Each structure stands twice: as C-alpha cells, then as structure tokens.
Length: 551
Image (cartoon, rainbow, N blue to C red):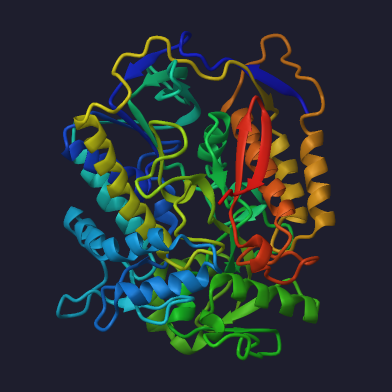
C-alpha cells in the first residue's frame, strides 16, 4: 500500500483558541458542551460531519433508566452486571443507574420529547437483558433522532458555543509537562479554516463515537472510523476492552456482499413481542435462555450464528407479522419504511436478519469523572470505556452512559478550572507527533475484509493470526509520498482504522476464552480464574503493547 507522511505541529496553517474542545456531536459531546457553557467556559464543538449528524441520531430503541413504577436502580444494576459477563465496574454501573433517572429528566427539560400516554406518563418498553420495562423511546423508533434534535437546537440557541463542522480530529497537542494543550484537525470545505490547523485548549473531551467501520458490515455510519481511540493511542493514553465488540443480532440482511452501514432492526421490536425463527418457522431461542429472544445481545447473536451453521443458511428471520399494520406504522415507522425500501413488508413477511458489528464496549480508559491517563484529556460515550459495559453492553445503556458521564465530565472540568488545575491558557510550545505514516485510501477496504474474516462474530487463533499478518503487511512497504501528493481525510481514516484494528486484534488474540461478545471457537468456555481481568493497550514510540491489568 502507498503511504504518505504528514506534519501535525501547529506552526503551519490556521490556529484558534478556546477553553475546552469537545470532539463529537452525539449525546455525550453536546451534553458536555451545554453543561460547560452553562458554567461560563468557552467551548468549541468539532464534528466530523454536520452538527446534527452524530451517531446518536441513528439510535432506534431508546434510553434505559429506572423510571417505571416498581423499577429501581438496583434492579437496573443487576441486569447490567449480568449482561457484562463479570467485567463491569460495579461502582461505574451504580453511578449510571442512580444518576440516570434525573439525567433523563434534565434531558427532557432541555427539550427532548419522549413518547407518553394520555396522562403524560413516559411510555416504557423492554429490550434484551432487561427484566422490566425501562426503555424510554421517542417517535416510536426514532429516539436518537429526537435526542439529537433537542440537543442540537439547544447548542444552536447558544450563540457563544462555537462549532466547526466537517472537521477530522488528528492528534493531541501537549505542553512540556505532558498535559493536554489542544489538538490538530483537518477542516474540509470552503472557509477561513480549510486544511490542517490547530486549536489550543485547556482541556479536550473526546466524544467521537465508535469504530464500526473497521468491519465490512456495520450499523455505524461511514464516519465511525475509530478516530478518537486512534488519537488517544498516539497520545500515549490507555485503551481497554477493545476485544469486546458487540454484534447486534438483528440487522437487516441485504445479501452476502453487503458492505457499509446496514439497516438496524431495533431490539425493541423483540421487546414488543416479535420472534426469531428459522426458515421452518421454529423459534430457536426458546430453551437457550430464560428470556428467549430477549436474552442479552451476545447470547442472541451466538444463537443466531449457531442456527445458521446448523441449517447451512446465511441468515435467520424476525417474525412480527402478528403486530398488524397499525402497530408497525405507529410504533416502528422508521424500521417499517427501511424494510419496505428494501422490498420487505414486515406486516406480511418475515424479516431476514443476521448479526453485524454494532457497538464497541471498550475504548479509551477513563475513571468515573471521564479522566483518561493523559492529563486534561477526557473521553465520553462510545469512544470511552468507563467500565459500565464490561464484556457486553446491556441494550439502551449507551445513550444513558453518554448522558450521565458527560455531566460528570463537565462538572469536573468546571471544578478544576475554579481550582486553577487546568492547563494554563497560553501554551506557545505545544507539540504534537511530527510524522505519522498514512495508508492510502484503498487500504480501508482491505482492513475491513481482514477484520470481517478473522475477527468477526466467530474468532480463533488461526483466523486472527491471519488478520494480524494482513494488517502488518499493509505497513511493511516504505512510505512513498510522491511529488506533490497531499494527505487527505481518506488517508487519515484508513490509518486510524488500521491502528484500532491492530489493537483490537492483539487484545482478542491474547484473551483465550469466550466471554460476553468475545467468542473464541478454540476457547469456547469462560475462564474466570485467568481472564476475569481487563486488557490494557497503549502505544509509545509507535510500539503497541497489550497487557492484562495489574491488580
């Protein structure tokens, strides 16, 4: 593969300055920005696409919180710990479930409208792994879009929140003491800030979303290329639990060669009573788990894969024909339109489904206030690993996690600012990594092919070693910049995907057991004696290491 090199020091190009840079426009990023502005800090929001095009808007099912009669945070905690397969940080989960209900109410006060009954009470549904109805939803199956709308409107209503759209974050700037001093980014499009430039800041909050595009088929949008995790690794920050990639069990099957973002069939469809069946109409999840189709996602995904193997087929089916047209139209209008757009009518037909990459349970390692291992660098949302999800995320906990920990990050930054503990305002000597080899854009497809074949739902030492060798081969040739060749967003995305794919594969190879959404064919059993621990990856001087957490 051809490679190019780039300069990331802030000297060339444009520069800007603010108190805090928030990278990402999903629920985590925008909530952080709003809370910081409410405390008087200057905030710059950087988003890779448009402000209203964050990953949050793709969320269908809803946001989980103990809001219903008879439900309690303790019950929510229990369900989360079970789903996490022994690797959740119980303290982090307790923070999530106890602070969650009020955080949702503050979101409603911000302007988000959830589906409610005639008396105004929030309607709640169930999803996999939940023993109670605790999923609040909006627009039937458009919860993420409604939350995004409300937060975007609130940000746009505050003229003091500066926004840079169509900007790809590159690398962290640090001062002489190694503290965060800002970041570099590449702004696309016309304007005074085109090209590579730098933003000096006293703190940086990563809320860049996931890395689903590391696989050929995913529910993630095209911009989910692991940019935040890659930046953190290059900055020397620790990342953890990368091997735990959740494959959503019910993604609309569009054929064996389907690539890119795939239509999601929300777990809420099963929560309302749809059944998983094979071609003969047999409900194969019955008897595999007490919750059948509503078992945690890793169990359902494995059940589907097993049945596909047993029957020699490429997909299973979701049967919601008994709902009838009115329910499909009122409760799941987005999914109904998506299916019909692909020639399938769920009112009268079975929906072909198969697992696809959906959510990264791991990410940049943080504490309960969002701190990473680099001073002044915070992470929140899917890019972060707070310890809430463990080895497998409980359905609809992700929006809640982004909301709760965004508020905690904002509170911590404000407190540190008032205590004089943030990086000083002027850091003229701030530095970033100087030269980074970039892969050519066509490497992206090869990375996705290697990862899908070797590190997908089913993994083994043989398949992952093949993937690791293929990834290493992509950087084996010397860099060739060529005359006049310029770095592009596509080259940076390919390079970021390569780094996170390499780290993910290393962790998955090291963990010799099956746990949560990490399924080893050669090590089919869970091994608490050896592997009830986290794997932590870090990079120094381009050398990536992955080791078990020290206790």
